[in-house]
Length: 233
Image (cartoon, rainbow, N blue to C red):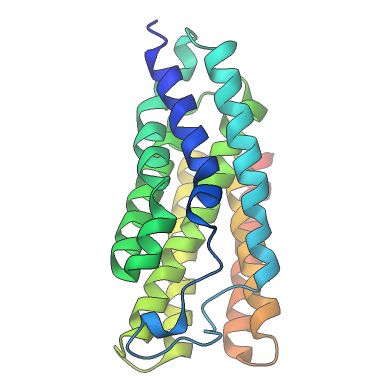
């Protein structure tokens, strides 16, 4: 096998991991980036939930290192490499795009999500903890983030009935996407567990401010827990 794709995955991962330092980090959209300012929108999980990016960056970096130095010519690793490159490479520019345009940031986020799911579906059963699992966590968080971006754009541009409705729409979309991916995989429970992490963040953020969203997130977390357990067993 030609190890060039393994090298490209490693390079894309390094740039992706370094992107917060190179762009000054990302603390969320400015409320004034939207025609209808989004101050503490109910579609967004509690702030602590975003700490999962530390795990994602570290695990992807370890995976890329193993892939280049120890599995560079391993045939089982090859199928997921192209979609990973297509996800992580453009993903390195996401923070810079988000500072400029929430719309283009959302489009890029959905590209990252689609290619991440593609990569996850092509990960092998071997080397689970250094390949399948980190990609699953990455794809799981992007599933939540992609639908959060939809909710932010809908509410932020004044489309439809308001912030709470858009939070519910985004939540349902994330659950439908997450359930479809987890069932299709029938493995990689880390994907579902990551989505549960995001849903718990929604419960914490909305427990008193928007109980309907919190209750829906609780039901979604229970559904994903069943699917993740099924995938694990």
